[in-house]
Image 1 (tube, rainbow, N blue to C red):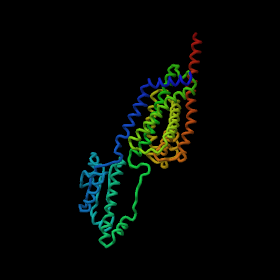
Image 2 (tube, rainbow, N blue to C red):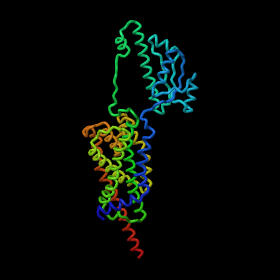
Image 3 (spheres, one colour):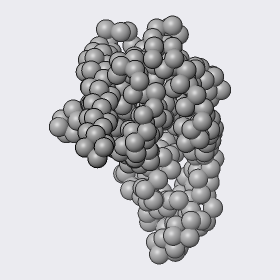
Length: 397
């Protein structure tokens, strides 16, 4: 069979395979809507906290009022003990506790630094950090205001008092995440991961199913052409399909979620082609260890979380032990995430993303050769089984 005939057979096989159709079409559409939905507000707001005021002074009440006015926090309970606050947290009614110490106002007016305690459920890092950030800002602002008032009462000019209270003024600008939101931070990397993982599942199912049917005695089209023809034909089905998915994910979805895009679209499409071809060959190569069509889905699902934590966007790469990091970088998706995020979201040049780009290029060559060998090995086993069966038939005859 020639390339065109095998490609047509592959396309028909894909159209008849409900597992692949669910993964590629329903799965990609489902994840594009479901994953960002809980984070559509971008930042954490109006988190309920409890307040334990041990001072009951005008300044402590002013502090609580200012905390209440921040967008991140809502004071939903006033408690008189830590046990009461912990009970509310266990019931899910509050996510944090603000503790104002005894003599809070006196210590502030004397120029001392009273300890304002913030306690919370740190298992929800974004919630905890937002509560802590809001209270820290209120603490700094109120402390500076008290200091300015004290300086003015001593006859210090206003500008002098202001410079004493605020010797350093900063203007923070977010370079790559203007909204400082969760969606813009994590979705670009996760969307690349979703494309990579679903491609591994789809291509893995197609290849593993052919192998399973071969072991069952079927001699299908995948045995009637050279391994190279089968590899290219199958790739010409999956890679263009995933390029369309990439246009939807990295184009339409990014536009909808207001995610920064700085890459040249045509060059980005070329890099996606490299990533998808490498991922496809990686999937074919892995089927060497699989004999059932269900196995690729199970293997990919198990690997998803380790990839998330070793890809460098949840946990910094420099903090990952190098043996684990280099093992993770043998997976095309890990290099693809680093490449796409730096090039598309951070505006890096190709020179600046040379590391993941060269790793992907090397993997494209190595995994293509290994994928070809896996298909050749499967065909050789089928040929040997056929020859053995013929000999047995001849002996019986």
